[in-house]
Structure formats: structure tokens, C-alpha cells
Image 1 (cartoon, rainbow, N blue to C red):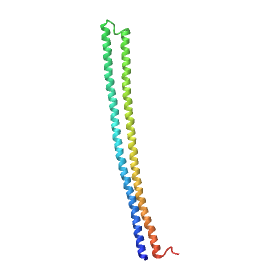
Image 2 (image 1 turned 90 degrees about the vertical axis):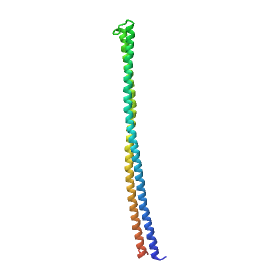
Image 3 (image 1 turned 90 degrees about the horizontal axis):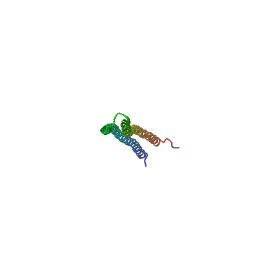
Amino acid sequence: MPIGATIGLTAAGIGIQAYGQRKAGQAQKNADLAASKAAESEAQLADFNAHIADLQAEDALERGDEQANRFRVQVRGAIGTQRAGQAAGNIDVSYGSAADVQADAAFVGKLDELTIRTNAARQALGYTVTSMNYREQARIDREKGAADIAAGDASATAGNIAAVGSIATGAGSLLGKRYGFGDN
């Protein structure tokens, strides 16, 4: 094969190789950009879920307050019923065992009210922890997205460097064939 044809085919091969390396780097960059966008979507979903968990925590506390307030009213009603029953039996409601029964009912009622509030606070804490977990996941997803972009940029740069390297190596080979460098 004549030297001109060999040089032409070698040059074409070098060009194709360099083009392929550059395209591979760009394709990886595009894939990493898509992964970054997916990570941002996941982060946005985690942010939304965190917001919902915050609302659930607020709701749990509000429901606990409402339930505790209703219970307190029921206890007061029960104590009132006790007082009325005792008074109907000609018992002095402000003295002795009658007062003790009312005080015990008030004490047990207060303990139950506090239990209701504590349970609501525990439920709210669970939602708050869930919210914090979602926010941390969103942060991690965003960091992953940033790392994906950096990796894509590095892949594109590596593809470009590889392409330039192929061209330089190929050019040296072509010059060697054309001018006989490296022939002994």
C-alpha cells in the first residue's frame, strides 16, 4: 500500500478515535447531569415529605391539646356529679372523705390529662424525627447531585484530553511514517 494511502487511513483512524473519546466524555457528562437532576428531584421530594411530617407533628400536638382539654372538662363534670350526689345525700362536700374523693378524682384526672399530652408529644417527636431524616436525605441527595456534575465535568475533560492525546500520538506516528522517523 502506498505511503499516502497508509497515512490517510491512519489519519482517519486517529480522527475517529479522537472523536469517539470526546463523544464518550460528553456522553458521560450528560449521564452525570441527568443523575444530578434525578438527585435534585429526590431532594425536592424529601423536602416535601419533611414538610408533611412537620405538619403531622403540629397536628399531633394540637389534637393532644384538644383531647386533653376535653378530658379535663369531663373530669370536672364527673367531680361535679360526685359533689351533687354527695350533697343530695346530705354530706358536706367540702370536708372529710367527700373532699378527699373529689381531690383523688381531680388528681387522677390530671395524671390522665398529662398522659394524653405526653402521648401527643411523643407522637409529634416521631414526626419531627421523620422530618429531620427527610431533610438530611435531601441534603445528601443534593450533595450527590453536585458530585455527579463534578464527575461529568471531569469525564468530559478526560475525554477531551484523551482525544488530544490520540491526535498528538497519531500525528507523531504519521510524521514518523512520512519522514521515516524511528526506522532503523
